[in-house]
Length: 396
Image (cartoon, rainbow, N blue to C red; front, side, top):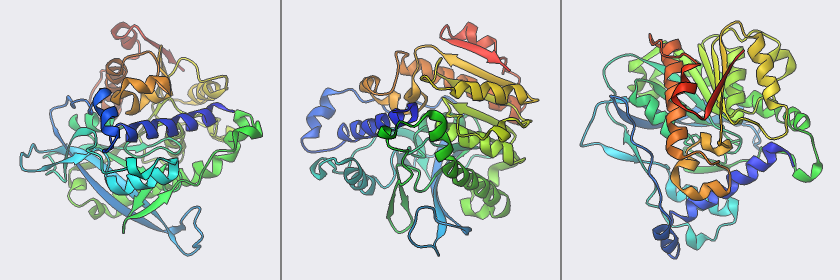
């Protein structure tokens, strides 16, 4: 079984865990016995607003559908700097909770009796909050394979509170579950090859390149909409500086972010979070990315050659490429999952504390994007080793 196949199995276990500890009925006993953390308070000067949108790309057919006439649809979530409004309603961590719970019950084989409406994890965002005054850069987030657009909410809220508009699509049919307009539930169909097939990491990477192509097209389409049809996000894009666009992603989303960065000149800076680099074609990484790139991840990515690909693209990039290796971290420390409960350490997170990895990620990411999309100059790679004894940096 390859590293990515193991990661997929771990993700399904974590989804089950997060649902089980939040549902009603007999699971209340479990809920009371296990400490559950909410999303950490965002530390920027702005309140955070959030809205949800549905987009249709009529130029592309919907992936993995039996209806060849259907257009590709995306569910999109946006976090943005907002005015503090005591009359606004706090947004739930998970939208469409009842639908999602039922869908996950079916997908994961969880008894329906456990899948009552959850109270949900508390976060910082105001639902459809009034946008703040000003002009703010745009950041696009791409989730991992069979993950969700909300998987890095703690970072999205932190970035928005510091003056960024963060836009995250569910990559339909590649996300674990997507709820589209009309309460249509779409399950993932983009499963990795079966672990019994004994495929190498390189063979798995080759097979998922069609997924990478679709995901990258999703990002291009989203940026097109930002430029050509800004009304799709109501009043949010009125405060957007569309000349400043960055992108970041976790795992396969990090790969997606890089592929979009290589192929779209409107993207100014790219960051990966424990990214899966292997699907990037050799002819692509041989090119000059020609934009700043930073990566935060484990010290070692299983037994694969994943980081060798990162080193190659870094060496070929005419702009700065930096890798920050974090001792004691594992794959899901780079998402929300390790932030909720210590039980995730039994599945896909490491020894590092949730508070510390959150601080490392937020500090480096804010400095990186501030230096490349704003006027900041705090991104000095060697300083983070002095701030955090768990961090080692490499510049290519």
